[in-house]
Amino acid sequence: MAEIVQQRIEDRIPELEQLERVGLFTKKEVKAIIKKVTSLEYKLHRLIINKDDFIAYIQYEINVLELVKKRRAHIRYQFKKEEIEFPIIHRINSVFRRATNKWKDDVQLWLSHVAFCKKWSTQGQLSKVFSAMLAIHPDKPALWIMAAKSELEERNSSESARHLFLRALRFHPGNRKLYQEYFRMELLHCEKLRKQKAELEKAHIDIAGYEFSAEILSGKLAMVVYNDATDKNKDAEFVISLLNIASIFDFTKDFQEAILQDLQTKFLDDSVTWNFLAKRELDAPGVGEALQTVMGRASEVDRREAKCCQVYEKGLERINTEPMWTSYIAFCLERVKRKTNVQQLVDKRQERLLGVLRRAHDSSLLKEDYYKNWLQILVSSGDEESAANIAIAATRRYSQSVSAWSMALQTLVHLGRDDVRRLFHEALANIHPKESLPIWRLQIQWSIANQNPEETEAIFKRGLSSAVPAVAMEMKESYVDWSYTTGGYKKARKTFTSLQENRPLSKTFFTKMIQIEKEQETPKMDNLRDYYERVLQEFGSSDEDLWLEYIQEEMGPLGQPENCGKIHWRAMKFLEGESVERFTSKYTLLQTGHL
Image 1 (cartoon, rainbow, N blue to C red):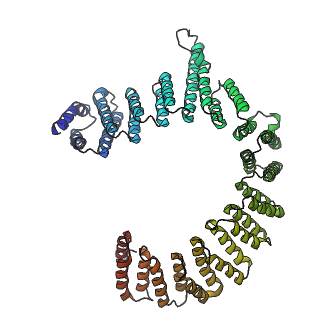
Image 2: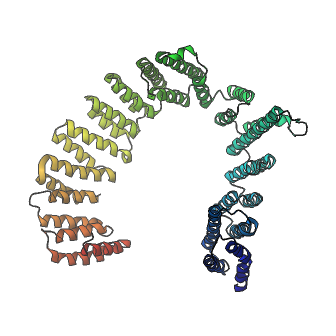
Image 3: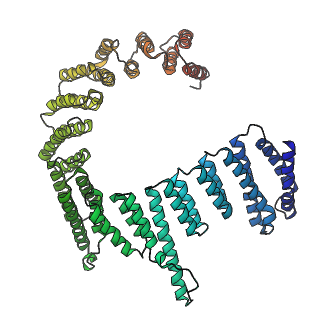
């Protein structure tokens, strides 16, 4: 191994001598480089090699390259690159090859090599890296796309890029992203050739000696890609994505018309098609004179939005489905959210949205999320009766949905409806118990604000008997809080005492009572000890913070510091696993005054 390392160091001597001779590095710096690379070389030639050692080696060499580049710029010396930079770049590529051969599955390592080749303009090496990478990772479409783009952009080779896309499609037949990028590549190549031809003609140069394929110039190759892609992906969304790509190029008007015709003949049973066709009306040309005034512009916007709605209506005549209604409502909602100073336009948009929401609801095809938007508009406009009716209707349509019931009940509580109590019972009867916690919270809030204490307490007791642990635990915590708020310390303590043996129990339930005790004018240490002892029975094996809080209480003005040793001993005995280490660290900090 020593001979190999020594040989590799000796191979560096010509470039290091050049670095010193031309004044890029000093003699001291050259010695430092030799020392460092000797250490790195030994690491690369051990019996058990480590990927991090290869990365460190490569990074060091790249740092040297960067430094050489900066020194060149500083002293304005740009000669002898073949004798200085080229050997370093060659060595880095060699180490990258060794690393990727050893760790073939590390895609990031391959991409690092690609990035290096791009930055230091080693185009021939770049193609080899991509070729080797794709041989190992042909299952990753993104790498094929990256390689094809590199061939087109870095090497200006459309033929190689096309060949890579075709190979990729053999591995991934029908892959949408590959087809989209292949289609884009053909259009880019076509645009480039058309510009070259136009420049030659403008300069009155004979183009007979240049290869300008009529099929490529006319975009026929791109259309071949489009036809193949749509044969394998019969989907409106995919066709629209290709149309959007084509629309970037100004010579594709005929393509766009052909694609649009395909969309209108083959995909009219898809709501995505109608959504796209409707939104196209927003970009349709308008009347120039009308755009000179604020009212004129608002009128033009309204006209375009009305045209969009006409397309949606045609779509509903053909496919009366939830996705179709969803697209229509989403469009109307987006227009309502747009800001304008013209009140007539605001009113028109809101009226249009309310009408569509009502019709979708009547057809039982309105999505749950849109009921919330509907209610917000009705409440803000002051139509309380309609809001109440829609809230109840939403719960009938989605009777098992927690969010639908929460939304409806919040609206009805806000409106002060008399039948809220009945609806809370109905909600809890329809919703799965495991999902009912938000309804219990809402019911407690409503009862505290609107009912007498006896009725609120009855709701708490019903919640305590829930078979769902999360509901029962939160009801206990809230019950203690409410008892303290309405009846003071004695009632809170009585509630706590009656519930502390009823499982399930939470840490918060106990800490609330501890906090209430501390808030009293003369807290009783005996009571605090009882609470801590009880919570430690439940959670003392895993929660080191409880033990520390207990110790801090004993160290305080009400406690007895001599008890701290006993509590510490018990903590070390009760705690399990990593909690012991955490407790020991925190206890040390507490003793030194850092906690």
